[in-house]
Image (cartoon, rainbow, N blue to C red; front, side, top):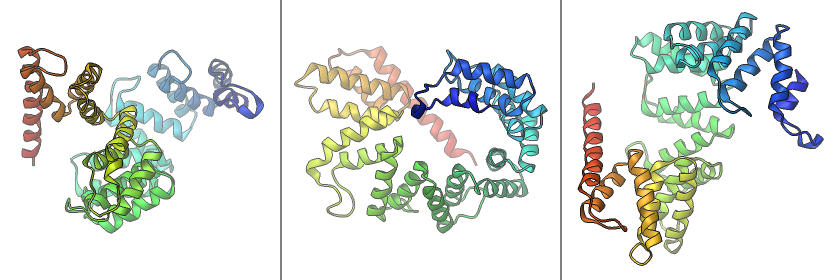
Length: 342
């Protein structure tokens, strides 16, 4: 097993590169000898597709079944997750919950977290919601994501009585573990305050910067937006002369990490020089399109105008203008329906 893990991860100090095929070979040999840890690791490798041409959820499911049958509680957890998510097997929520419950009773933290999330998200009795919170608190003894989740639940008042002090306490516990998500969420809480007003901007900025340095997309986006605006509540926090240049850096990082809204702002950056440089107009159109296709309403609105009037190097196009206007209207209708739900 140790040799297999060495091939899976590699060891630069020994000059040994990762060799997934060799790791799979050794783990498969161990699995045939009823090694439950080998079965679990093989399940993870096939689930993630690590070092392989593609993921193989069916094989992953099979190895999780083997690990579970051999009494490995983590195998039971991942088998439950597979049923819950329909990964490698037809989705069966009831079976997934049953298996997660078994693993949770045995003290598996991931199972406690997953089951806790299921209980707090579903429409159920107050007792079951309370059970979900209890499971999350148990999971938080070891799992950072559980601490962050509890912080968010207490902040929002979801399935618990709203308690900002407890939310901050849980966020800080997760931040001690190095959670960029918790840094961003606590930064946002300090930034917007509980009532949406700007509150403790210096604290917020410090947390945003810490999360952004870890590659957090939303933190980079938030910093980009603040620099783009060129002002922050509280004098001297950002020099206006640096704002536009710095905002581009943060938007680039946010886009690299998957933020679609960052593409909208990158388009605005290119628009600053679009009249003088056709290449900039082309880039602006590209970024607006990426954002619009991903559902960013501001980008959809802008593209409907561009194609209606012409601009950014394209002629008026009623069909495309209508397309983005329809996307914008459909999104607005969906949001209205959500607001109407009790």
